[in-house]
Length: 190
Image (cartoon, rainbow, N blue to C red; front, top):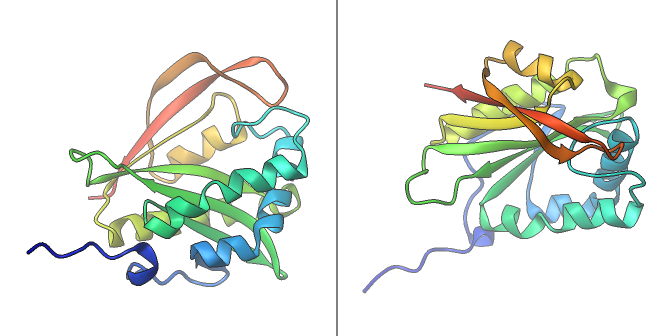
C-alpha cells in the first residue's frame, strides 16, 4: 500500500526562519494581503520595472496575478517572502521549485520587487539572502533567474553571488511596450 502525499495545507512549512522584517507567507497569508501585493506590483511596473507587465496595469490585473500564484504556494511548488517596513509591504520575492523529475535540486527566483519608496535600504539584498536560506532548507542549491538587460536589478544579482550566463535579445515586451533583452543568471549555493 502506498502512502498518500499530504496536501500542502497538511504539510509543515520548511525549516526556514527568516529574520524580521522578512516574512515567509503561507497561501492564506498571501491571500490576506493580496491588495497590498497588487499595489506593490502596480507601483513597481509604473516605475519602469520589467517584471512581465505592460502599462497601463490595472489594480484588478495586478491582484489577479498574485491570486494566480496562491495554488502554487498552497501546494508547496512556490514560496513567497515579503519585507515589511512600517507595517507596509516594502518588497517581495518568490522561489518557484523546478517541477521536473530531473530538477529536484533547482529553483527559479522570480518577481523580486521593492516599492520605489523603499529602495536603497538593502531590502532587495535581504530578500535575496532569505531566498538563499529558504532554497537550502528545501534542498534546492541551484538557483536561476532572469532580468531585463540594463535594468537596475541586473547590477544587483552579481553582488549577491549570481553568475551571468548570457543575454537573450528581444526576449519580452517591457512595461513601455518595446522589446527588451533579458540577462540570465545562476547561483550555486553549495
